[in-house]
Amino acid sequence: MLCYCHSCSALNRVPFEKVKEKTPLCGKCQGQIQLHDFVQEVPTEAFDKILRNSNDYILVDFWASWCGPCQQYGPTFQMVSKEFGDRVQFLKVNTETEVELASRLGIRGIPNTVLIKDSKIVDSISGALNYDQLRQWLSSKFKIIS
Image (cartoon, helix red, strand yellow):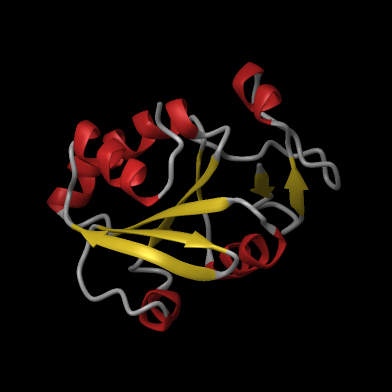
C-alpha cells in the first residue's frame, strides 16, 4: 500500500503484512506513518500523489468533524479496511480542510464514499453505511469478497 508521510511529504510503498505487524516508518525521514488500521487521512497533495502512483483500487471516505453521520461511519470504514486493506487502498479526506479537492471531485454531501481506479471515479455512494452495506457495495463493484 502507498503511505504518505505527514512529516516530510514522501510517498512510501509499504507491504500490507508490515502494516499489520507494526506502525511503518518513512523511508526518507524515519518518522512514523500515521495509520488507523489500514486507513490514512490525507491532504490534497497526498491524495494526488497516491492517485498518480497507485495501480490499486482506492476507497475514499469524504467526511467532516461536525458531521454526526460521518462520526458514526468512520469506525465502519476502519473495520472494512482491516478485512480488505490488502486489496484496496483506504483513504479519508476531511472536507473542512480539503475544500478544493472535495469540490474538484464533485462531493456535495457527506459522508460520501468514492471508489477510484486508475485515477478515475468508478462509483460513489452517499450516506453512512453499516458494515454489511459497505461490504455489499464493494462486492458489487468488483469481486474481492468471496
